[in-house]
Length: 227
Length: 206
Image 1 (cartoon, rainbow over the protein chains, first blue to last red):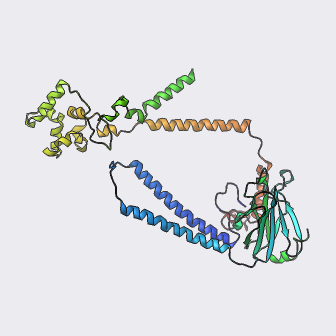
Image 2 (image 1 turned 30 degrees about the vertical axis):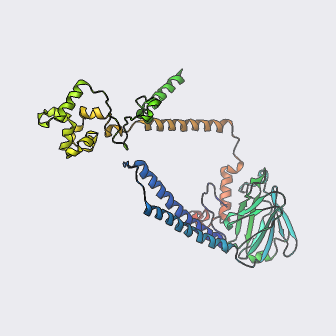
């Protein structure tokens, strides 16, 4: 989860998110360089003492400022596409969980080895204990094993929602009548938070997602399935 | 009453220091826009007409004297005569026409601190004069700071009269328990919150 007034990305909990953080640093550096260059040019324009307004024919400069941006765009596109294809790699998920968005809660279905279905509602403010995370904690978390590829099937039962967990680099729209798939592998145990990311009505801000990632051995013992 | 006085004070200052007003000190009718006009512009160093259209008697006399040999000019008149000055600055005969039209500023000669009347016939302001800064920025910065301050007052009023109380999760004890919980969960342990906590000594890293 983010701490108060956090501006940057959360630390990665999956290899894809690590790649995304690196890509973000790369793209941001390019952005800073271009912005600085433009600001410098603007500063020179505003403070020049030169007054010749009849300059024309700058073919060499025009060639450079066409080719150079094209190269920069390629330098951004290649890592971006690399990560995009990486997310679609076949990774043979060990577990498939269905996540269904409702107004204004999520339903999770563990139907691989039995039939576990439950709802996950945000804890109302009056039900919070001191130290709980307001607007983030839920009554029933999604318990999953670490270091195993997991497939999430996301859909919605009414309007558009979006299932997002920033630290895992996940955001998948929940669309009624459609099944969207996303996969992830968590590298660290812990509790990870996300919030609904598609406007869905009055309580759109009040239907968070909480994943509890635990070691595989403990997951196999079946704490999840003793609901 | 007070408001009227404040407004007129600020308004007068805003207009008097305004760069726009300074640029249009002479009134120009719309019918004159297609006629050659005089303008003091840094990027238009040779205006289409001279500044003074109708020379006075002394000005006409000076012009006539300038046409004759310069040895007949007194020292003062030499200083006053633009052509002589420019010749001294290295502009040859052929430059005289161009030179007459304001190249006085190109010469860094010290005796040009008060420009000769010949210059003033052709030009209203020298380059140094037309490029001078103004005090407009003080009006703008002062006005901006005033409105920022006023906004702060508005926000203070809102906090007092409009907003409700903060949720209980903002209480100090709650935040302390919450932070402890986040550290126990090892939230962002690589570069974020938990990475700044020393788990052995049970304190924030120095």
